[in-house]
Length: 99
Image 1 (tube, rainbow, N blue to C red):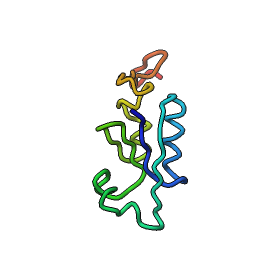
Image 2: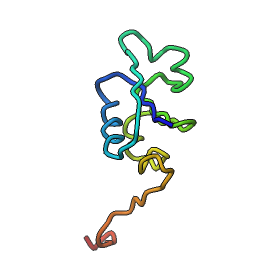
Image 3: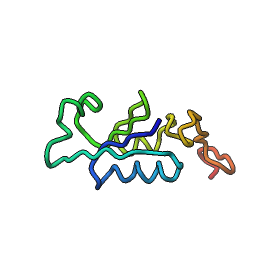
Image 4: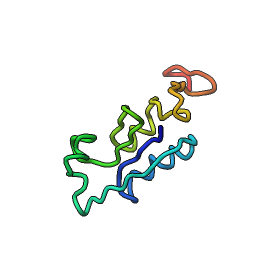
């Protein structure tokens, strides 16, 4: 299944697109024209009840916003293989007073 990214061709949806390209995830862009009010369309509000962009959809999994996509450990991570990533910093560990 192809990941869908809903939003305008400018602004915060580009963060999502860059992340998907980095992860080599196949995606489709679904344009939402904010100036025409398409983000307030009833069909769009079923995906994102607050009418904000971007929305990223992978099957039944839906993410709101660009930053959430960057921090997520969703099916979008690691090429849509449903893998969780290790978010611990690499290298030496340090306590509160050590670094």
